Image (cartoon, rainbow, N blue to C red; front, side, top):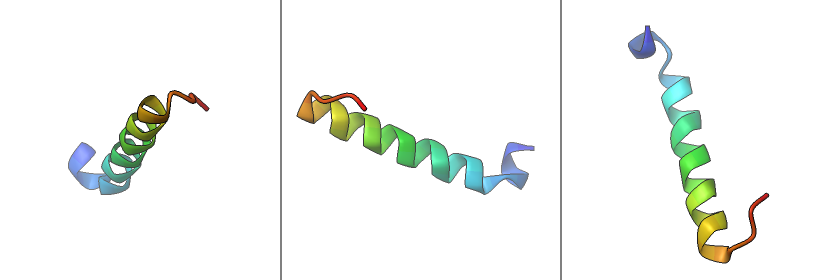
Length: 29
């Protein structure tokens, strides 16, 4: 099913990128 929902992967990647940025900035949202 995951293959049928590529958007979920994109969102997860975006979330991870945001988390990494927040971690680097040290300012969790």
